[in-house]
Image 1: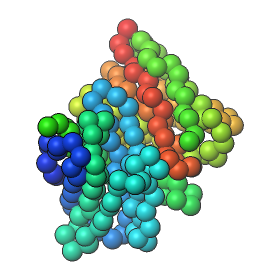
Image 2: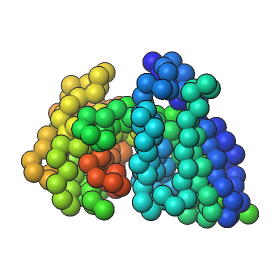
Image 3: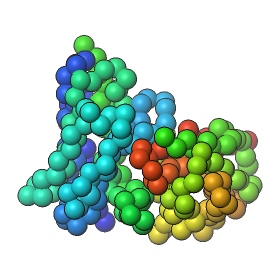
Image 4: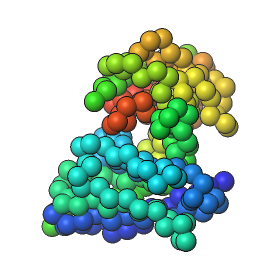
Length: 121
Length: 107
């Protein structure tokens, strides 16, 4: 059973860069696809992007200019960086495992517990 | 962007009731529609993928169906542990988008 755990600062100042790492246990990160999703407090879910084991990525166009992702197979981790953050980026950030069933379309089978990141000075 | 409109936004139901939640896509998404359940303070949990495939380990009282751009999640006999918020998600087009959620409450 795969387990995912987000880690990173819980408080980020406006205009700075949010950085989160997802540690994966129970399976090899190189064999699967991965995703980031966020949820502002009391609101719905917003898809951030997908990382495919081919090395390809797909990002939400509304965030694409600010998002960077990476995978570290040696540590079985993948990461998210979101630059120039504002209060609107305050959310619970989830890392997740993605399975595809049609081209690059798929579903999220496993989720981390989530990490609350607050953007505030 | 493809808009996913969920209805109702909330509902009250009793244990044993049949519950239906609908998600309408603003354009064709084939069958690239997933359903998730989320309880307060917890990560979402996958229930249904590809419109009608039941995720392993999910009770059979949950089912999904599709008709054109309309998708339905049905709970055949609501159990106490089913009180939660339900989200649909389309993964056909970038950006992948979620419905706004349906909160199922105890009557």
